Amino acid sequence: FKPSADGVLRMTTPAYGKIKIVKSGEDGKLLPGVVFGVYSDSACTKLVTKLTTGSDGTATTGDLELSTFYVKEISTVKPYILSSKVYPVKVRASETIKVDISNEAAKGKINIRKTNADPAMGDYSLAGSVFDIYSGDKKVTSVTVDASGKGTSEALDLGNYVVKERQASSGFALNKKEYAVTLSYDGQTVPIV
Image (cartoon, rainbow, N blue to C red; front, side, top):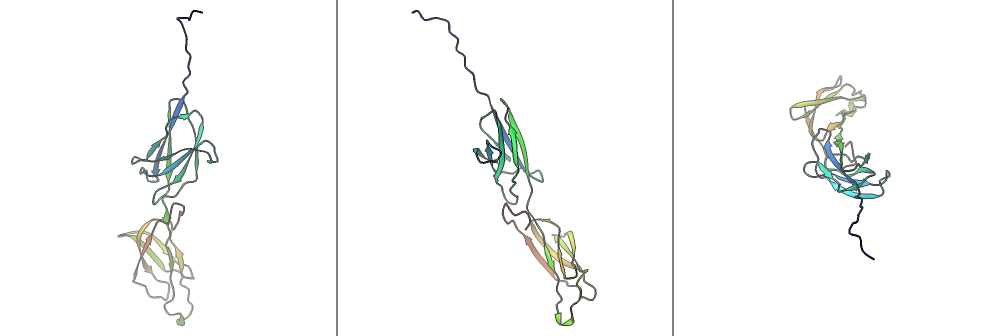
């Protein structure tokens, strides 16, 4: 037996691709510290890898086989709400597939309750009292209370506010007191505080 000097070696190199997540808030600000899972199934039970966005709001997987993967947020940062949306991503050979994901910030509502300071004077309707809500010196919204003296603001950004009565109900004196209110983050699963 005499070995041949000619030989052919045939190898196939597996093809891979990557997923790049770009995470931002609803205002377009890039968000560091958000954790994502990349899964091999749409139910998101078979975790392939976990990624955490860096200071630039991005995270990129290592090489992934050519297939469809599913990206889902695992945890987010304050004051944003955790998204339950699943993003299917088809990985292609030698490409980095970009996935833009945006989060909504938590909001808060201010509940106002106006009461009759002297109930012995009778049970009068409190409808029509108008309260202005300020952030610093800027009026952001107004609330008109109903006959029971209750009203609720629209959803507001989290932060510090001052509530002032602008107009009293018919037959009532204007309350000149200012009420400080703080709407605080209550966790990544509480959209309205």
